[in-house]
Length: 450
Length: 163
Image (cartoon, rainbow over all chains, first blue to last red):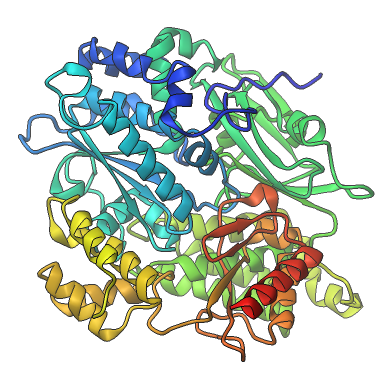
């Protein structure tokens, strides 16, 4: 079956000729009309629309956005904060970058609608440190929006005031974890907080109720208010509504970003048709479907899933619709939408060694199982590649990984152990054979991964 | 601390963004590093005094976040992405090219013998679709294969000569 057409809602203006990131261009394209509509609605009605829309967070966990908002403690008497997670740093993910650089006002409008709906008077955009231009563009866009009365005191002639400030990170992946991000915004090391009791909705920034939402998620909010929650829910598939941006990288002919209705395109259509298939003379070997932390899938494997009526269906990787629920049923996740493709030129031990170096570098060091475990997984895979490999190393790696997940304050424990667990489970043969593989390889022009 | 007037003005403005002064630590450190190139001991003490903190509160932040550095580096900062998507497209070779071109080793504190560049092999820069990617100072460069790395190196060398 042919791949469906892209449905660009969030990326409507990305790469469009003549579209610029200033306020005049945004307003010319209907910008801030939805904020005007929103401030004429009671805040509770907007929350209802977002609940009806079924919007799930686009940052990685896929948590219901309306549900997240409904958990906010509104009786504490403390201010409510909105923190925009623009710390895009999950390897394989590169969507927020384009929104920030090319269409910053779309994000700002989404932020202001969200702030109005949740009675937020102060929002912070936490942008990763490696996007200095992005930070300047956002500051400029906020200044423009403030001058036009879309942000700041008494917006649009109402008695409602709300400020947005940009806060830059400084190169730490853990700041993408929402409680680590909050600590960082408080000017500390980003050690994630333990939940309970530190659910951001109750005890977040400065111990006040806080909403942390991803950039793409907040952009969707704007469009939900525009078209209504029920209409938005018709896009995509049940429980996996709306569109999402899929970022494809690695060994395909046409890597890039593609926006599709959630669940309407399969992995096979995405990789073979949209991205043009494997590089000449190569075959697909493996794919990581939702950012580097999500569990890897091996081409050729099949998944038998239960249908609602009790019957079952069998899917190949190519058959998997790119939605949250099916990917979860296949033992992995939709995560942040970062699809990393590897072809038959890649040795999986070496690919894992690359990722383990990442996680060992990025563990914040707060919890012993993660700090030590991620380091040992890196040491083992690096030794396998650069020194002696042993046939039993796969099992050793698994035993380390199995002792991390579930024993840490935050989900980094899972994030760093899932690659090792899944690589060893799916490619155990390659780990076992690695000592022999090394002896036979000439190592001349081989792809270096670690 | 000898900061430019514009930096001092920016710092005073940044502090007003937060209800709690301590929150401004990262933004102040960025402002100082952009001005003087690195975070010295006096800078840590200055930020602490400015935000009514103990120096340790600033020191622990400086030592945690990879982007802050405790000593000067090369005049140009070349960051090559190391993580999987870039590595799959030849990022290791790209890094090697810069190392050879400037006769240096990749490392956050290494400086080429002529003092011109620091080459750093960093983790994911969030532009995986245009791998391999490189940041030179604040500028992102996409699809930097060995030939393009050589070309960018030549450009840096030409600019250095003009100085």
